[in-house]
Image (tube, rainbow, N blue to C red; front, side):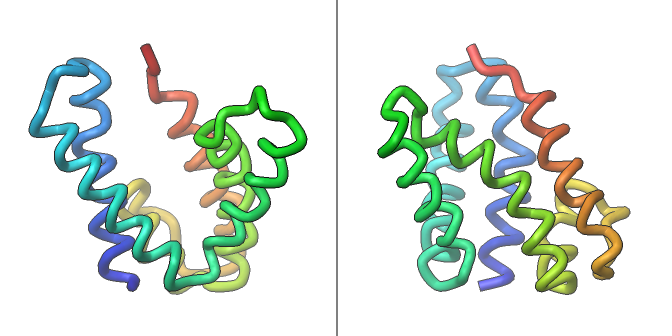
Length: 125
């Protein structure tokens, strides 16, 4: 599962900025869809599905919160706890975003901040 998660993050990092610059980029959209499928497989086979469970409660109580937005809000905070619990696996995945994140529990805050910064740097049109 770890290899699929790493590949998914690598694809998203590579293709998302290109697609946001050109929403008609069919190749980029293909790779993002493929990455979404990989992420779904990883999510179903690991404990990270808890983020989805919590988000369904959020959007159930507040239907105006889009599912993806709820996941983005919960995901970065969850990265802190995931990195604390599984620093080796987390660092391997997050190195695709920030190679300076180390497999030590002390880098949990760095993992969370990196995902928050990624959201700020992503333009949605």
